[in-house]
View 1 (cartoon, rainbow, N blue to C red):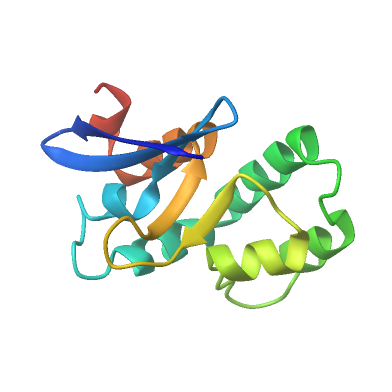
View 2: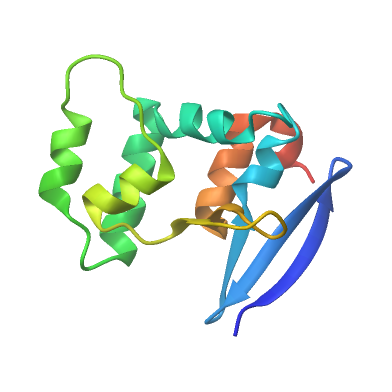
Length: 130
């Protein structure tokens, strides 16, 4: 069973789930630092950047032997504006390390701590120093 904790960063309370010796941090809570009402949109905007896509692709290749590299290259090389959500990313690439959890209390978008720290760097330089 997953262990749930909370941490506080820059006055923002952030949920952490520990499971199988890995910490998964709530990107939804972190995004609330920028826009509490549209946190999921903030996460989607981050995931839709080319830099983030490259980062996620490399992370997945290192940690996920079942990562769908062909679909990753299709996404990466698509024309036009990229719109990516955690659900779409997982469905298309068989990704691990990021997931959506439903529920009013305790739900949200969670990511492995490596991915969450990268998101925090994009979100605000203040998260790097907390």
